[in-house]
Length: 170
Image (cartoon, rainbow, N blue to C red):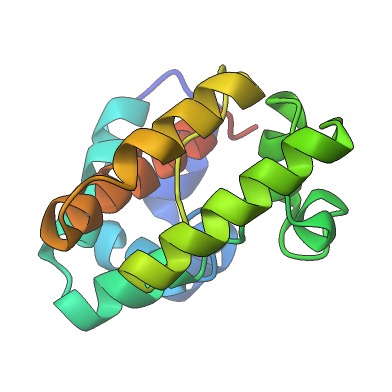
């Protein structure tokens, strides 16, 4: 038994209810929650996040790519407005991506387009706790990665986003 009321609730849910409650945590990919459900009961939020990370790591390459592609572009006006998911909008705003100057926005969107063209998926980074400058720096550095390494980096970032969202569950 855990002293975390959220975990107590999650630990007793059947698979469909668990997926309904946590399906949006992994951007548009409820299959991640369905796979993580098998590891119940969760002793703590770290165990919950680890189950989600394992579900991502053990998925087929096609599912992994679809998960990466489900993430919105950074500084996308629709994403920031919440039209592509409330979690993404809040996270992007927390990093100041909703208040970029016109020049910063143009630079970020230009680099993101180059990234998407190079790798075939959007630039994914856990933005919570980052500044626009650090995000742009990371994007510029990661443009130099080889495709396989970058795909692995993107999956690690997805797992980090999921972990942060699970820790924030209320």
